[in-house]
Length: 421
Image 1 (cartoon, rainbow, N blue to C red):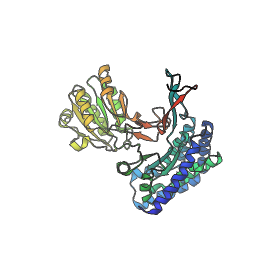
Image 2 (image 1 turned 90 degrees about the vertical axis):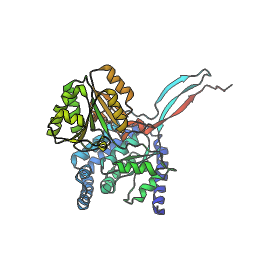
Image 3 (image 1 turned 180 degrees about the vertical axis):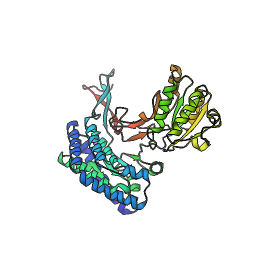
Image 4 (image 1 turned 45 degrees about the vertical axis):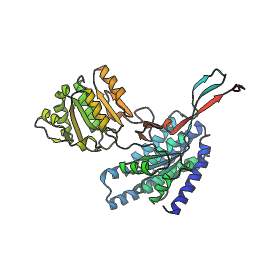
């Protein structure tokens, strides 16, 4: 790694540390005011943001960037407006910082409890989507943190323009502009330098494809909040309402394909096999390729279902492809999820209370649902207002990561002159 990359990251890190010290003391009103200013500036500078995005789109066309990534990269007036509204939505959320819980008296007379506090400096590494620049900065600011943003090289002009609006808002609000810093270079060595900046950065959050997350997890000396695959399952139990099963399965798969909470594997109890052909026909009408086990293929007869391989059960397609397996019991369904799932989101469709409760207890994923689409595994849908990502880790947060996930707790003790005997 070049000394230049380390020097640049040291400078950014030192500036972030200083800003974080101030941000942890900023009151809720000031943080909300900053976010509202940022939304107004983003709207006012929309033409500049769109012009910057046009440069990125031109480069994307010239480099042959694939259509899905170009769609994520592209901005228009509606998407910029959505970014501004997102900033205002974060401003409207309750502030977790300073909240005290479980304050209790001990026999000694002291009171002991927990206070929620910011993490400090957050490093955010992400790809393609310029809106992440606004979303991540907003969540970090509202939770009292400083953030170092490293977006993908394909979005460098867009990210510069969006970050500039946020930094201008910080200055106008009388807060340190270095609470939001963008790594203003496409040099890949700077990613490595950020991952090794343990002297300055408290947590790294990657948001992008599997290769990015794996690299971050492998190389980082800083704690990482991450998720890898979203191999999500829907299990249709023997006692499922058939219409409900159809609606949930279709929504979980076809609402959007390229998202981490889309269903990738459908498990159907043998006694609910009567719904299998109906679901298959509807999926095929939507252009979904079905890959099934031999038992499932026998049940659906002549419908166009390919043979599923072992690799299919462990694949996050992020595409109109679905693997389907017929199972003999809820035990077999849970065993399948345990073996092949990625710990993201699983749902059971059932009218059997005991089966639903078993599924909730025994399936070890960050979100487990009864009679609901996996597409609900989302920070906004969970009432977090926004999310910075979805974690399949167990420490320090799990599932959608919102404002509270960007804080931690410290013990507080309130005394009245007590001394330990």
